Image (cartoon, rainbow over all chains, first blue to last red):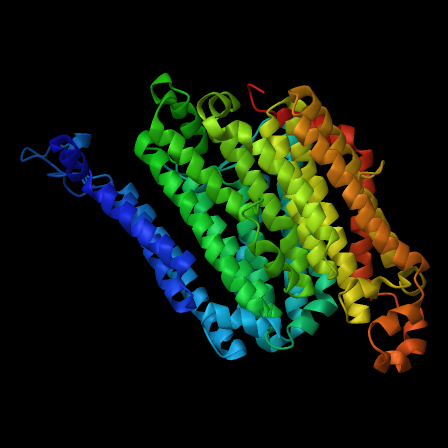
Length: 129
Length: 506
């Protein structure tokens, strides 16, 4: 029991991402309202972003800018610095996510104008006519 | 200048896209001209790069901003990507020329914005093909996906909902890809493809569960993007409700480039040995591919709408491509790569021909085919060539790709895939025979009675020879000729491009 507990606690960031991932996927697949589908999509994307950004965490590390010791020697110890790459990647991925959200909302507006509703079953019924 | 061609190829459409958003007041002719010039520039750069790759026999490595890989992003153009790059830019150029009338018809307002998305999509696809960095690939994948959502949604009416569903599926696919890249990054600390290949081949990562999950997630994401059965549900609606130009641009290219990405991940980042020894489900893929080929063709056979029929043919062709790649032998790989080129041209040709028919008749059901050989002889002739290529009649290129795939399947002993290839070919023959019979022997009067009697006054107008405008006809004929050309030069394509890109271990 203790082992299982530590297994979950030690990697809590992965678990949190996994839970969010499934909440998002559930929303995208099961919900009937297209707006809720979009919310699901955003949660789903955010879960992945959190997952990748959380691997960049390093306790006690400093910003990845070259530091100098008191006698003006550069500190070349790689373990002293945090890895900036996950953050940079996620910054790009956030921008992509925002763009997708924008397009999705624009499409939703168009759907509402054409079909008069954003409920999926009503749209399908409207299209069958 | 020459050593900058990989960057020029991608940047010209990007900047053209920016310029296109601004030149609205100059009118549609300026937008049309700028689009064609920019994509012709891309094609020239792609051809120059291909010549360089073939002459030197080595991949071109281009460091973006002169940052040294694996830290910086590099563009890698080897024998495989060179061929695909030329295919993308050539198909895009032909579609751009073709779009003169159709794009204006579909987008009466703000044509320049439509063309801006067009150029951006081409840039995204070229970038996906040329990049040597897995995260950069994700960004370019989303750039091309976002511009394709924009283009598909210009189809009006029902297209919005179809595009919305495509957006949902596309986002899930891209997110799975990103998640997979995250797993691989955690284990390797690298994103450069060549560097990743080196790190992943080390024995300590061989049995790593994280790497296996990462690989599975990436492949699943790519499968959603390329609409492999049973993940194909978004494709037919999204593509068949789009405008004519959009369908001509997206249908041949998006799925083929996704297949190319699959090949890259499978054989450049990972290796055939790794996939078939470490991944438990790799032997099942061939059954998925067989099911895609047969069920895609059966569904195509049951469609009344011409464009929907073609979209299900794409689903079937994706089955051929996937099967060829997962056969993991020389002939199968050759067939898959060759079929990317052949199927790109075939799909373009079919969509262009059907687009021309819809442009003239205004309807997209099979009834529009009635008496086509009398009304639009050139279009009907090219459609016949494309149909022959899909069925696999020599000397069109479709025959040779199928020949390689069959050879590969027999060599690998995958009899299910052999049967699927033959059955799908026969089904395609039935499908096109039905259509062309109608086009050849069908009388125009029958078409009218089928569509209701109120149109009977239009009969005299319809019997006249009504060929599509020259800007549509010219790309159509070139594509039809290219189907023969690629077929006749199969040996050269295999010898100078595909042989060289053969991954080690298969």
